[in-house]
Structures are given as structure tokens and as C-alpha cells.
Length: 442
Image 1: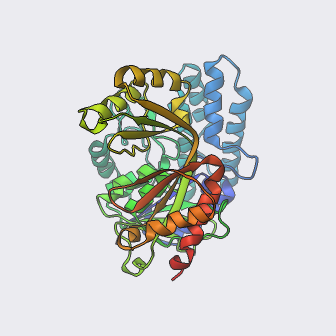
Image 2: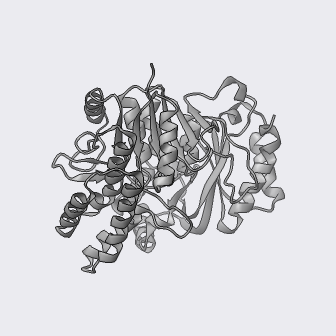
Image 3: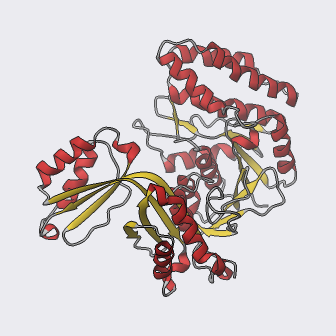
């Protein structure tokens, strides 16, 4: 019999009512043997996520500000869940240890991980499954880099000992035993890692939506759902802001060709979105798969005569950014020009210093900086084999009176990225969607 790994996000495990839905889902399919859980999320508008409260506790302690009130909110919420679920996992002892380690300066990663840790203990007791801690199994090196092979071996060996288990997401440990977390949303990655370790037939990622849509429903009214999407397409959309699944959750299962199924805990009969290695044959008629993007980028445009004949010019440009710990988003270039696109958040207050260094080290003939730029990515494997796709996209933007400030296309030809002004972001997405929506319904 095949094995399914099911990961449940924060909204799916927000309280005892939601965990009741989780239990029904697990009980409905005996193949769902290994369960990964996030920390409890928001129960209603205006509520707080447990992880946010824990981070806030750590910030208070770092600034010598009492966090008793915030900490008690976390304690009360978990105790209420324990009582409602009619399980007993020794929360008083757990919280005493957490508080002691927090006051001793254990750090943000440790305190943030306790939401997943405690929720996994509660969920395991409620479902009647073993609790398997990610600490010691999900491995990072001393610099905080995730260790793929070592983790896969350790998890595989441990989970063979358990016919069913609940594993906390989001964190692992470094060689010295200190807790190390993934970036926010990292429980998706843990689920993918577990699926690879047990050679699952499918990785189910349960959340509060039915899967991916072709565009953000806050921008486009009733966008079409995406029933099937390839790993590569999903990677592009996730990177550009489609936030249903953590972008790095693809890597562990991709090599093992394990499909990911995005499902809705509140509507478990809905098939959701299936993420596979290649788009299904019946989807070949689809031109685009989805549209995503985000705002607030800065573009540094450099012009220098004979730039292309000057060895190492781009390398030196990127070296300047590296010196400030800045990674770039895109690097469109021409024979005598190069443009580097950087998130405004990464720049912080370093733009002036970076421009001075570019002037000293690269001696460009001209430098222009464009602020308040948004990036919009149109993604689809069907784009490469269709004549006129780019023309239709640019025509749609022109008719919507959107000025294109930058164009970039990946080497795979599955995406076209345009830079527009922040104020035109939503208009651009709607124009592109409407230009292709009819084809996507065929």
C-alpha cells in the first residue's frame, strides 16, 4: 500500500474545531500515515498567529521588556486546545521549560519553533499517532544551511520505526543541537522532506484554499482555478508572489517525482491543484498557467560604451551588491547596458553608497535609477510553442495604457516578466489575464 504525507497549515490547525476536521481527513484514508503540522494560525479576523506571538515574546526579552501578558496568551490558547481535545501532554512542564530557556537567551529560532513543537504533540495525542520531533532529524550545518542527504537518511531510518507519526514542521537542528528554522512558511518544506524520506506516492498540502488560481482574486474577479501545474511553473509563480506554497517546498519531492496536491481542509472533497513534473497532455492547449507579481522594486540602469567587450564588468557589478549582502531579482542586459532589479527591502538605506561604489569601480557613462517598480510574471509552458503570445501580452498592456519599463524572459521561455510602475500593477495583471482568459477556458 502506498504512503501519503499530509501537511496541515496554520489555519487548518488553528483550534480544536479545525483539528476535528484534520482527524476526519486522516481517518478517511489509511494511506495518510505521516502528518506534518504548523503552529496554530488565526482563528478569525483580528486574531494572532501563535508564531507571531512567540516572535514578539522574544523581541520583548531582547529589549528587556516584560512579555508575561503575551506569553500567557500563548499558554492559554494551547491549554484551551488540550482541554477541548480531551488529551494530556504535560503542557505545564513544557511551558516552564520554554520560559526558562527563553529567559536564558535561547534565541528567536528556538522560541518560534515551539508553536509547531507543541501543536505536533497535541495533534499526535489526539490522532493516536506517535510524536516524532524534527530536532536531530532535520539537519542544518553550523552555518545554518539545510543538509539534504543527511536529513533524508535520518528521517527515513527513524520513520521506518513508526507506522504513523506526527512531525512538527518549520525547524530542525544544527550540529551543536541549537534549533534552526526555515524561513516563514517553512512547514511546507518539512512536509516535502518527509514525503521524500518515506518515498510517498503523494504529498498533500492542506490549507484554507482550494489550490492555485490563475491570478490573485483580490485583483481579478473570480480567476480560473489551476487544476494541474508543473514544478517549474509553480516555482516561477511562487517566486513572484503566489503564496499558497513555500517556493522551496518543491525541491525535495521534485527529484523523486512525487506529486504535490494542494487541498482545502474546509472542503476536503474538492480535488484542489495537482503539482506534477510535467503538465498533463490535456492541458497542452493552455497558453498561460498563471500570473503573479509584486511591488516595490528599484532598478539600477547602467550604460557604458563597449561594456560587452570589458571582461568581468557584470561580475564586478554583482560583487558590489554582494558586499552589501544584496541579491538581485533580474538582470536584463544589452550590448552597452545592464539593468539590475533589486527589492526595495533589500536595499534598505544603502542605495547612495552603492551608486557611489558603482561610479568608482565601474565608471559607467550614465546611471539611472527607477523607483517604485512592480514586476509582473506571466507563466506557462504553452507560451514557448505559440506564435504571437508576447505580442498579445504587450498589446493588452498598451490598450490598458500601462507603460512597460522593463522586459525580461527566462531561458526556458515559460515566462515573460515585465516591469511597470507600482500604480499600474493591478491594471497590468487584469489586462494580461483578460487577454488570455478565453483561451484558458478551452
